Length: 144
Image (cartoon, rainbow, N blue to C red; front, side):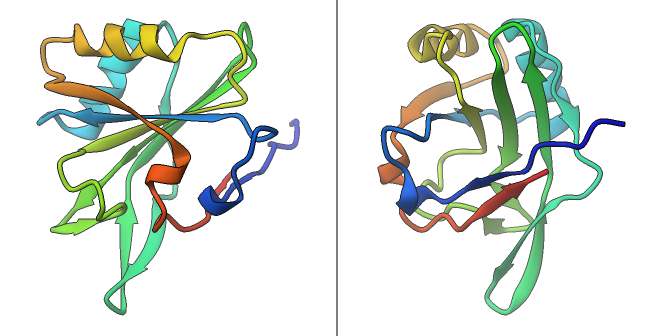
């Protein structure tokens, strides 16, 4: 079995060398259903991670469901993570966003085209591009 690449994203370290793009998604659907819509719309294969992303908020550990895939054709990593779980938010500065879609090492795909495709999905209310610098409070994501 091939060793999985471990990616360490730290938003305050982003520069031109680290290629990450972020789309905030507003949608009332459950995470697995949204992943299915994103997969069908973008032609990718997001799958649910076994372990949730954990973040300590107000001295309590919160777990956020997330999905990932690596697209061989574009050599791009996709990560979909839920922003709101049991009244807590992964990224409190973006309270209207339900999910975040991260594209890491994308050099081929047009982020505006992806955003527009997502906006065309009936159960996606909105999709918005964010610069990494717009999310200052986000902690380190260790993606396995």
